[in-house]
Length: 453
Image (cartoon, rainbow, N blue to C red; front, top):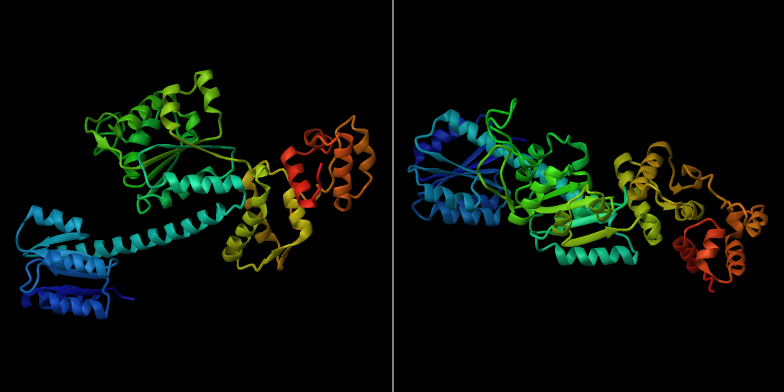
């Protein structure tokens, strides 16, 4: 479908020339004044408006403001007979894409309109991608556990202020990157880019130029006009520094300066560039131990640690396992046109009793595998790759459990737990060791089975 253009100009010859140049590629309408143009715009929202700044019945800038308020997706190109820098700046602030200076060459007109429409299309794709990502992020953090509710509350408190850095800790696969995106989408910078940088994947020699860019002639092989770094790409958005714990010490020194001054220089450059992005870092390492080992700067840790969020592993929040699995089930139903609608009780029990060493990422991978290889409406236990883990093996030297291994664990879970608690005189930690399971998991099962000590 061809794009719709609206020309608003009191000069008939301009309207005719613009229409002749553009009508072979676009559907073109025109208006001789602001009132007529606004009336047409309200009847049919155009993709692009060519707006003369000097209209007889209204100020072009005021009309620009009205157009962007009533039709924010419409791209506006200002047309003027005078080179007025103040006007250009003001028009840009009000949302104009570009401006054309009369007399206008037909080639320049075509090129400017093409660029504006391509930009509109790209922006629409980015907005759609952000909305999709926002929905996915919300689903991933729809956990019902107290730990996740506490994180939700903290994110709501910190999101409005973009200057304090945020440090996220947690095991691999726990969802640190997803949490970073959640903070981004709740912040004032949510319309800006989210730039993710894996600090562990950049070579030591290139890390500073990758993060901060480089100026012309900064080193042999540098581009003639220099290059933006990830911090510049993240302008008015968020930069997410994943695996911050492995950042080389030299780059740590530069990053500390950036955090303190909210500004930086490109490698080999002398222009001070302001940081307008929110800075979020994440690690699966114990940074305090890294400081003791001399691989991480203590002052950088202090500066990063203004707001610290710890994402607990999945096994410490069993209440989240089934809601997350159902979220991924719906996600992959949409992607693969499958129709899984529920989880069988046996499969649910297996999901809840598994250790999840890969955390949320492993949970997602399992559902993706099921969506590709299986079909039906119900998730069955045999669909799970760890379905063979139906029994709990006792550690050597635990006679009570050696006798109990002949029992069908699926049918006798409560009996096993009660016997373990009795043998350990009600000590949950000791009972958990006898059952070869984590204490928090045993407490969860006790709560579910209404077992008290």
